[in-house]
Amino acid sequence: MPRSLLRTDKEIAEIYERHSKTVYRVCFAYMKNPMDTEDAVQETFIRLITKKPRLESEEHEKAWLIRTAANICKDELKHWWRKHENIDDHLDLQAEDMPQTDDVFQAVMQLPDKYKTVIYLYYYEGYDSVEIAKILKKPKSTIRNHLHEARNLLKERLGEYIYEK
Amino acid sequence: MKNDKMIASWDKILPDEAADERMCSKIMDYQRSHSRKDRVISMKIITPIAACFILIVTVTAFMGIQNQWFSSKKDRIIMQEDIKVSEKTNTDLNSSAKDDSDDSKVIDEDVKAFNSELDTPNDSKEHSIDTENIDDRREVTPPVISDEDTALEQDNVIIYYVDNGSIEYKIEFLPLSPKYVFAFWKYYNKIGEEVTLNDIQIENGGSEYSEPGVAGYNGTDSYVMNVKVSSNLKEYYKYVSEDKLIESLKQTFLGYSDDMPVEFNLIFE
Image (cartoon, rainbow over all chains, first blue to last red):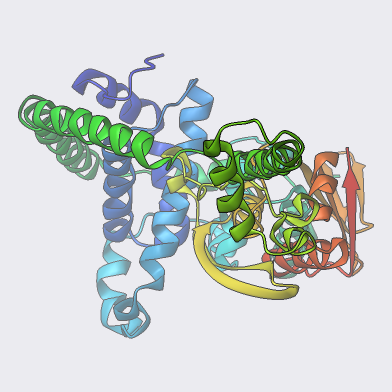
């Protein structure tokens, strides 16, 4: 694992290879369309290049990228022009580019933003609530509450069948 | 919840080949231009900057030594105390000079000069320095946000502090992490680096449950915030009212927390 702050081209390519899919999914959870997701992914890796954070392990590296990606997306969604954009103008474009998804994914995408990343990290990446709290730098109780609320919302939308008995 | 369903649905979220190639090539283009720029900067700029920095440090050090910029407030008090001690020595000298009339005139002149400064012995008390009430806290430096933490979500946080006996506040745009909230609270309250935030927990009286295939958490509306700090914070009570200092810490952390705690506990460790 390189400790140098100035990463070589090869190191950046390896980091991209290792984590691009995770970063893409985190960004997609916020941006909801491939084009904006692509921009957010690029911005995340560009921030890694410019900020040159010292990351001790691959896990640390992944956690930094997830946190950065989530914050870039949140910042992007806060932009005034995005708030004034008419979503109907982009419906056709989105329909063409959107990947085929199922009911579970659609239900997750309808959750409030703050729940989506937590759900993704918990169920897909397999982190527990303590690890998610460390990654997102939030109190453990906040993460547990987000998981609890998110599960209740999913239960309302998808019914009991999503639970294993 | 069935993890397989969740995993299967997220598995479909991938960039297509063209998008992946596009993202990768843009990132690598940026990396190449950035690393080239870094090398140019290091060659062209760092050398003159280093030379200027050494020059500035040398001049500052020279001027500082000449003008005693680097002596702390405490050092200055000690120096003033030394002056006070020397006054007493002069008084002794005054009485001894009167006793011994055979001494030279030079001593008499010195005594007169001293007496003209101190008209009455009682006045000298007004000039003495009450070291017990002097705020001899060292200057604190503003907190520095580490490179890594620039990735954190940032927002305005209200930092409360005690100023001349009343609680004031300032709004700081900082990473949303308790360590920075505490660091800025310390900075505005002139509390040194030796005081540390050891832990911060929010308990909401909820409980976790686990059933086959399901793990969850039942929350409640009752929140308790436990903030653990090093006990050397108490040493600052001699400078700032204990109640107000703790109140400012409480208001700062309660304002920062999203969870709206209803109870605040400060624990010294």
